[in-house]
Image (spheres, rainbow, N blue to C red):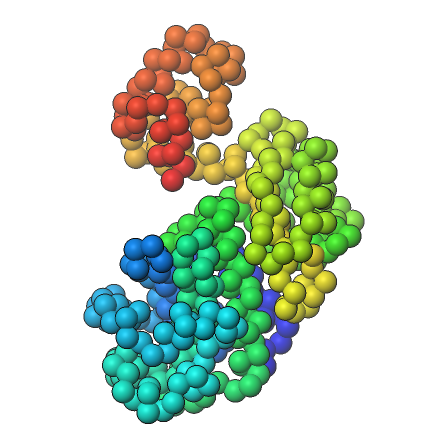
Length: 359
């Protein structure tokens, strides 16, 4: 079985992907390596429309996936168990499907012929925000069955997989599709006493900037006293596996856009150093995201230097009066720039501009 640091690395990859720090395909590649899998597939089914809403793969080319997708959810014996038994912590085909059933399954035959996937290990995050989410790992027949230690590892990782997907959908922080957040997100696990048990690169970099969020004496320090008190209460209340706190806004001494912070309970089935974790904090650097959003808009829509400056302040929620005072121009000039920004970006107003540039 994997060492604790290797397991932690996989868990880190799942949460980093959920928060947009890394591409989901990177997490699939790491999971494939851990389970000696020849390919991996992350999928999401919209329960209301019965349509596949997400397809991310590792070592499965687009042409093969296109031929397989139509039959995938409808007839795959192995995947079917994820729908029939969502309570299963992990699904391994030979534990729940007979050899005869598998040989008669056209999807099994497809994988065996085209992607060298004889055996299947599946993880599910059932009924997350009206979606069914599954992760399938295909093992070659040459590799053989998953052993007991691998199945225990799968059960452990499934807990974090479900939590990562839930965070991504609940907070709407992450891009479930391919892409990176450009360093706008981070997460940390904390104990009941507030001690930081693990902090990823995002939170570590935010703390290094010392602008309202620090790690001092092994504890997370938030300069905004009101936000800090609410977040401490959220950590104390973090007991239900599938609930998350409201998003808290922590003001920053520099006047930059506040950090967004949400607390979710830490999974109980985990590994050192997370065994004693009480909660996970997801942190978004809104100011950095705004800067990147505006930079893309300036390039994509041809905004002038002054329009770019005004657009950044609009995304921070400032009105014409506040913007005028901030950059020392008249309100009428602000309105002129704003009208030009709306026209170039193809939007009708402030709210629509925020939605378009922040999407």
